[in-house]
Length: 186
Ligand SMILES: [Zn+2]
Image (cartoon, rainbow, N blue to C red):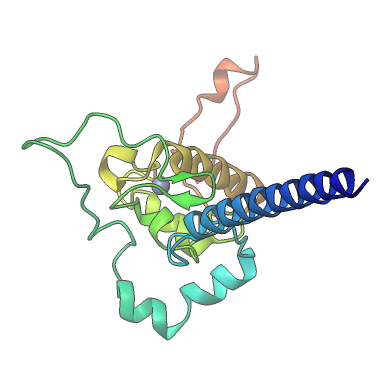
């Protein structure tokens, strides 16, 4: 009987030690994973910043010191191989909430620049003052994702009257619309 008890205690000990090592192994692995997942807070873009904050930021001293009176995209240059920039801009600078590139586009690099139809001071910087048209992504350097967001925001701002736009002046020949000649007096 004593032999049986000995064997039983031995098996118990082996099993317990096995469980301990296994659990230690997994706990170590978890710790390693956590260490790998820690990301640079300056590259984290999971935080959603409200438009009101962005509007206040554009009027703040910090913004003035960073950009001055120039549009946000003027001093941006994309890093690329060779003498000519790629024809298309980047698809997106942000992948799964983290900046995935060394030089993100002017909107992605500053998390306080939020594209929204209410943020007119930012949207105006992407409209040509000569033609009134939206500037091309090739000129501004915005990634394709942000450029699409910009188009939506500007269209919405025009639609809701936050931004004004000029309609070309047309002179109508009213004789084409009515049988009787309209007497115009000036
Ligand atoms: Zn971008």
